[in-house]
Image (cartoon, rainbow, N blue to C red):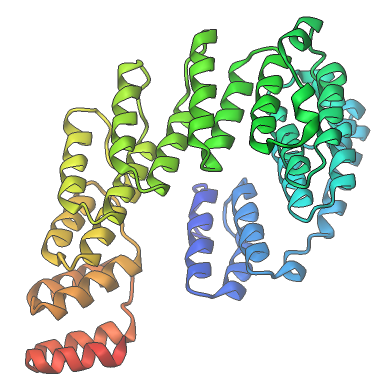
Length: 409
């Protein structure tokens, strides 16, 4: 690649860095990132973000050089000012996006730093005046719910009033429809939260962004009934649910072990003239595999391709192969892997290792060797235990295979 004049995509390095990380080779991942300038890679933003996230997740905060990012931002602001773009430089200095506020608010509330969280909320009012409420009502809700959970209901009601007046600039008619007097007693915390939800939705200017943010956040928290109410209200207002909302609903149902309902949600999405994407299908497929409904999972994959017009991707095949291997259905997993390769999706090394080990355990050495050859042709090497198990299965009887498998597992 170094000698090739063609551009090397940033996605290549992203995948390589993730592979190193999965193998526990963080130093190699860092070294690869530092060597990117030697390749013809114009933009390396995603590879940087990927490596930074991995290092932070591994608690390698020093290696992540978090403080050095301030210098990078200063250089950016300096360059903008020199080009007469001081307004953009000011935005870089001042503006956090919705995700930044959401992360900070969640962290402060989890640590019960409610004073700091309240100040953070007040600092968001300028965003509302500039851009409208949008997604920010989710951040407001996080603090208000936490105050209620910590028996500070009166303070939550007080802050809610400020949000409605100063943040959302709600019209006076909204206050007439909301009876917040019962909230101050603090006797019914869950009832108070429902009223807060209603106030935030009614208090702002209805928009697709605000409804979507609230519904997705509730589904992610597993509050399916509350999210469904938002969804109904959203539709009554004239907004159509987005793919992201359906994905979140499907994921929430699958986490709760209600995969059958998740399948129905996909069907409802189709009836609502919203074409589901492959991510939603993958969530359902993984839910079916987790509940050991492999027959339905295989049928669902075929239905997805033939009737619903959504083609499977690499993740789809990987989910199904892992599910089949967990049920010791290695021959069927081999067929799915074959189809995956025909579609030019390349499995990871772990998929080959699991399948080869499984085929050896059921006495299918010939198929195992074929997959070993395919694996090597793609520049991958099996684990040492897989090598040993394969050799033992070819040279010995099934009793020896079981002993060898137990030894190396």
